[in-house]
Image (tube, rainbow, N blue to C red):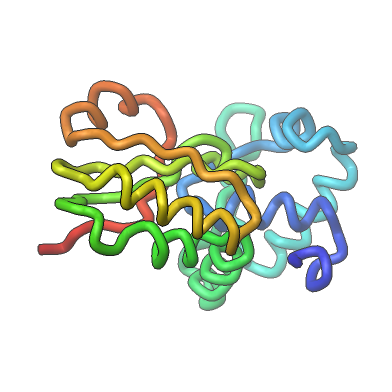
Length: 176
């Protein structure tokens, strides 16, 4: 779907990388390895996005790190569009209602790192969660978004113990 709107594969990868998770930072050679594309193609797109104010950069040693400009007026819109394209908004609607004492939900794995994937890793934090209901909702959500969803249910302590060094993208939090 995104390819119809954005024809550059490199630009699509960069937008997913930086705009799905605004805390993501990366430099040219790392992106070259990750994307499997030439540094020239990536550099060209990075320069365009930086000139447009969509990305910001900072020097650290001999590396220039890029990240999303969260202050750009279009950041929230681009972030929302990408979430809809990868199906996170539908995932939230279909999976996070009436499932027990849910405290928070996170995306882990490739999406939390800003990489597109056919698998969405979902971490549900709470107690007394209805596993059967969650499984049935996930099955329905998978049909809507045409992606596989792997999920794990953890307590706050387990989240701290098992995911402390792993990237997580908060997608829902109980504000009560």
